[in-house]
Length: 24
Image 1 (cartoon, rainbow, N blue to C red):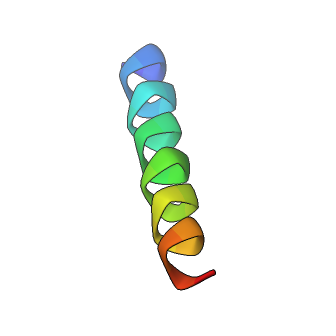
Image 2: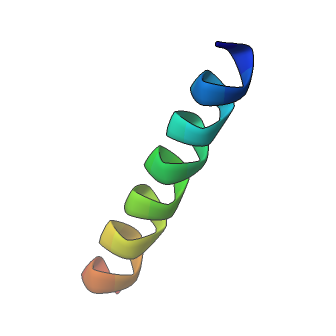
């Protein structure tokens, strides 16, 4: 369960990075 949470967090970070790149 802890591993799954980490994976979700990683996806969230990647998603935020993509959004940030689009804004730039």
